Length: 95
Image 1 (tube, rainbow, N blue to C red):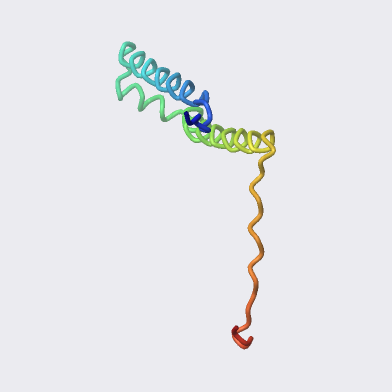
Image 2 (image 1 turned 135 degrees about the horizontal axis):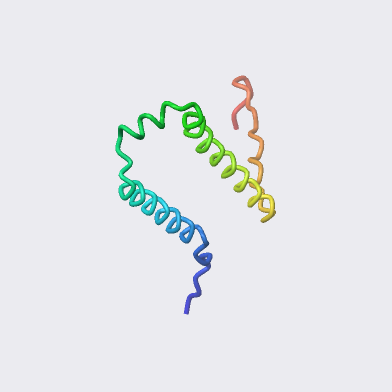
């Protein structure tokens, strides 16, 4: 019988499900607290909220890149460099 060489499912599914659940809870909490668009507009005019809207996703992106680089380094499986291409002159005799 063939034994699959595929890796076991990683914890990424777990984190995706937890993240989705947190988004759903935040949406339900927003509806329960009656955060109307008018109140949100007033909140969005504050500089702190504008900075947070810009910096939080940017910080998460940088952390994700650092986590991926760290994972690759810890595994010790750096991608092999591509072999150098032979340069041929147009004037060289062709075999």
